[in-house]
Length: 115
Image 1 (cartoon, one colour):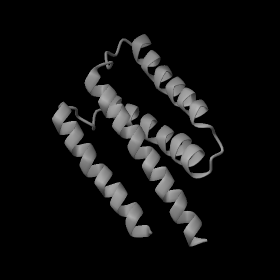
Image 2 (cartoon, helix red, strand yellow):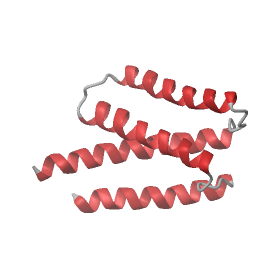
Image 3 (cartoon, one colour):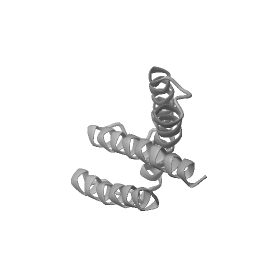
């Protein structure tokens, strides 16, 4: 099971590289790194653990929570006059949410099997 979580992580990193290359995004800028981190962590905690693993949150409620976090981040960018709202960034955000959700589910499943 540990091999599965490592392979999901490495596959996600490779996929992230190709997504960023195709969309001509630089992940190592401060703005995009913060965006990616917010999306990954919200996908990991809210979707991966809260919805798919423990079923503590209903899917509809989790979508509202994730949308609120994403909109708050985009609103903060708008207030700071950072133009980061583009279709490429939206595809990148969806990828980060899905990768975070998959990683959250796999990691929690591995932790449960180890106990």
